[in-house]
Amino acid sequence: MINWKVILNIAKTHLLTKIKQTSTAALGVTFGIGSYITLVCFMTGLNMMLDDLILNQTPHVHIYNEIEPSKKQPISLYDDVKSSFNVVHSIKPKLSQKKIHNALPIISYLEKDVNVRGALPQIKTQIFYIAGSIEIGGNLTGINPIDEARLFNMEDYIVEGSAEALHNSDNGILLGIGIAKKMSLNVGDRIQISPINGGIFSLKIVGFYQSGIADLDAIQSFTNIKTVQRVLGEAKNYITDINVKLYDIDQAIPLSKKIEQQFKLKAIDIKTANAQFETGTTIRNLITYAVSVTLLIVAGFGIYNILNMLIYEKMNDIAILKATGFSGKDVQLIFMSQAMIIGFVGGVLGLLIGFGLASLIGTIPFQTEALPTVATYPINMNPLFFVIGFSFAMLSTFLAGYLPSKKAKKIDPVRIIRGQ
Image (cartoon, rainbow, N blue to C red; front, side, top):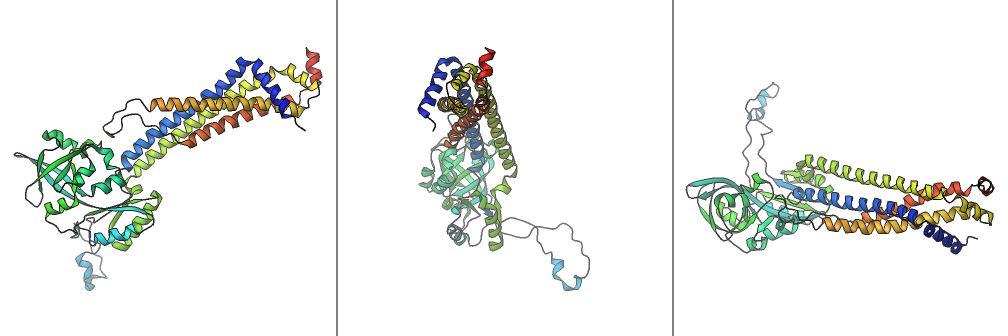
């Protein structure tokens, strides 16, 4: 029967008598795991920030009426020429309206789907911003501000004002920061706009919007759906776009195909709309995890080398232990216990150092026009990273202790004593 009390007591004595080597081995684990935690928390945090820059503002499925060429040309309607080879030049797009027919019933239908988190109506139109005799072209989007803030994190891009202020105003406008700078406007000022079908409307600026994309911020603005309908002179059921947010982004492709077949509308899923971005995200994540795993492997070899040398320096102790009646298995367990103690202590210290460094990085000021509401460097404190780091510390020290201790198990004490 294994006497764990004796084995652990001998292991503790070995570790304390060679405190310098023990500390070196433990620090190898500590800095390896600490570096891994710091790196992976920081890099995944940056990746998430870049993902959010696109994904926060992009619906999982975007539904609208698209202008496209007619599939059937007038000549194909005549039976007399069906058997002939017809060539049609300059195919023109078919006459189609921007309005989505039966938009409100479609939204109600989508919101009943268990996969759909929300379906929001929008109205997009082209306008002119008027400053004296100057007219600047731009886009006006009618939204439900509170729902947009809830589902698409719109508040993250409002640098002055709020979504609630826009919601409570019947003639308010959330102006792009680029337009505001061009026209020297402030919150509370009024701006005149003119839709392409004519007329001039005065709206009160309730806030500024900054997406981080300069070209977009120079033309884009938002207001309530009712306000846009009034500006365009359209009915309350006039909707040009529907943005769908899902619980699971992987359901975007099948849902978009279903919508196109069922409602004869154009439905673009987020993966199709951002194919290049998806590729960039995959590559960034691959680099992050490749560097992290490499760091752990290098730390593992360092731990192995330190423990291997530690065991070879204990040859005399091994000989004495075996000569006094300890079996090879007991000797192996003694050195395995030392390795696991080093792994546990080093792993815990590594997690604490990693957490501390990651938290410190998270307090460093970081300003970018892409995400104006981000004040410090983004850090992703995912508990899974800490579980992986500690598990690797224990696994690497187990292997680093097992391989040399297996050799120690087979050492002949007589040969060691004679060699002395």
